[in-house]
Image (cartoon, rainbow, N blue to C red; front, top):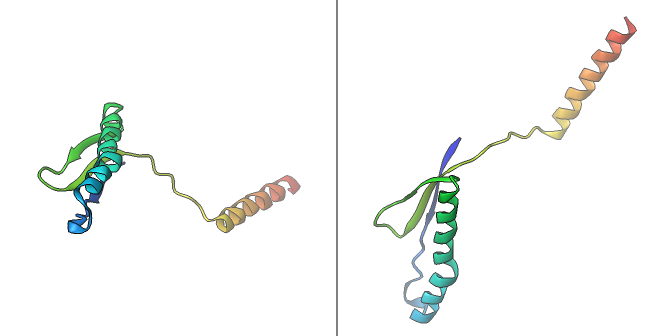
Length: 90
């Protein structure tokens, strides 16, 4: 399966001084770009973008495993056990 993952950039506006904004970029945004580049080189991310926007979007490959409700699984296993025992008694 492939998913498009999108994260929009929230402009902090004039509330942050330029030093604090630059610090946020260096501590969070730029390392994030490096991490995405690494994932792309490993083949875990297929593409990036979008062009000209303050946002990140990328396509990732992932494996999705559906989970079964525990009560349903219990009932299913109980029924299978009952059937095995009935066949054994015949």
